[in-house]
Length: 434
Image (cartoon, rainbow, N blue to C red; front, side, top):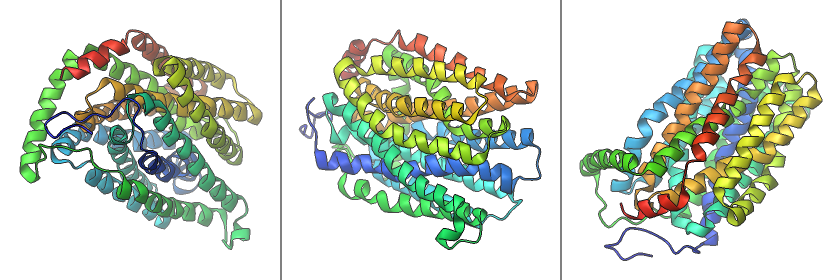
């Protein structure tokens, strides 16, 4: 550990296995929201239950809005909150706040009655804010548990556990909806509503290891209350200047903004896209389940790949795969096509996310991780503002959901072109001068 008067940093090969596992278990905890709620049941239940009497194109638009507007809120809040968290050593407290916000909103979905789609949108939006806000501070805590050379594998461990944990609960939830009587439930609708409640409980219980065992990054200049707010906002202005000076960080953030837009949009809109093409909801849910269990070992493989070949090369592989997935998505017409794409997505989704996180962590000063990851999360969520709206708008304008998915090619290609200009070594050198 550094001396009190030195910037926080860890030896390159440092790895506290216990703390790293506790940190990674937060992915196990909150990925159930991303899987069961965001990607799985909410889009289907929104169309078939809460907004059953609303036109399909209209419900798709409001689903896009329910994803985009909360992302806009997080986009605006993440950088200032990250700066305040750095100066006030409040990363874990803010993570707890947003986690509780997400848990309570998710649990409340259980009580939303048929036809109450505006209330469903509101609670879902609050849940997305809680999920996304907490993720920014969770990401920032990776600098406490691993040194530079171990970032790829620790980040991959988080995503792998997220796929496994999210997949296990999702599998139970799917069985509940397929065979509700076997679980003592009267119907499928009750099973789906109960699934939202189970996600909230799972998220709460498995957040405890991180909250109990992962420390706040040491800060010898820690401030409290109003002083932390004032100092944090001043630091925010300084970091904006730093990012302008750190050309490599700025380039990577722009590249990330584009390609992660395509990734997040596919995650959030895949079920809605499949429904619009006429696939059965059960087929789409099974495809999501396939993605989860393929993603578990694939994320670990990508972490090893990042250690051997470098994180940037791994991200390029992921972008190339998503470009092919998007093209194939235009032509799908049978359920097995959707299953094949689900396998392909599972092979690369966790990898591109985990390597992006670890690659970025190398480019930034560890003592400002909260704020820098605030910008990282901001651009990720700003991308999620554009992606679902873009698909929804193209679908409305053309009347063709197939045309809408091709719009994502612009995002993957643009992200790859910018990433090609990112010099990792230059970024590390510049980051140490701040």
